[in-house]
Image (cartoon, rainbow, N blue to C red; front, top):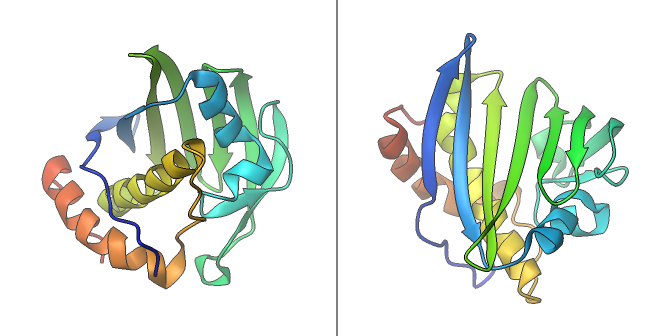
Length: 176
């Protein structure tokens, strides 16, 4: 177990349109969009905070493979980078889900808005909790104090309690 302690809850909402549910997760980061972009796209940085490692840089369109860091999480998953506009917009599939990352300069840092369209809406709260932990870890990496990815059973020690809080914010039930 790391010395990690979760940050305060992020701003979240659920967009239910076109027959699917999209988690909207907004987080302000202390770092400029260029630095955040590198953390979102470069495999050597992604694998330090995300639950997966991409087989290539995600800063250009095309196919990719996302290999889960924990074998218990399944995969690998096929991905398709649909849009990659440096420092502003990244959009790719993750299996049947769609991740859309928007970066906006904000107060000397970046307002990161993740829109995660889920194949299964029962995962809204647990995915919010999972992204919360991932982005806490990413912020440590951006700060120059990496703690490494928190995955599988270790992640659930944090994700479980956060899931309950995010379920209340989103007005949904927990998945677990």
